[in-house]
Length: 84
Image (cartoon, rainbow, N blue to C red):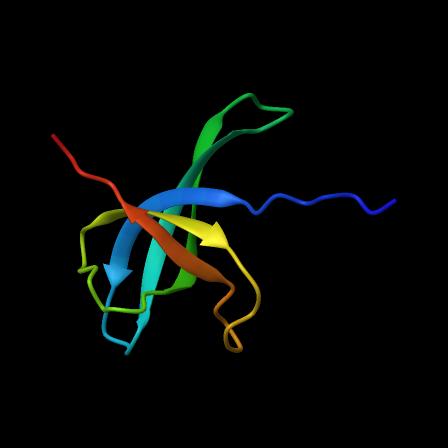
């Protein structure tokens, strides 16, 4: 029986919208060092598919894992988060 795999979802900030139908999303992750117990931040950048070019630099978005779209793109934009 095959194991059903759910796609990962991440939240981040758009850091680049210069490419056509593609944005770069920076996702921050806080980790704790196992030996020294110090917290540190890791920033990962993901290229995500933006079909309508509707997201601009500085927007907070949620991205979801998908099939490979190009050499570097394996994510697509799910929704834009509204800040109140």
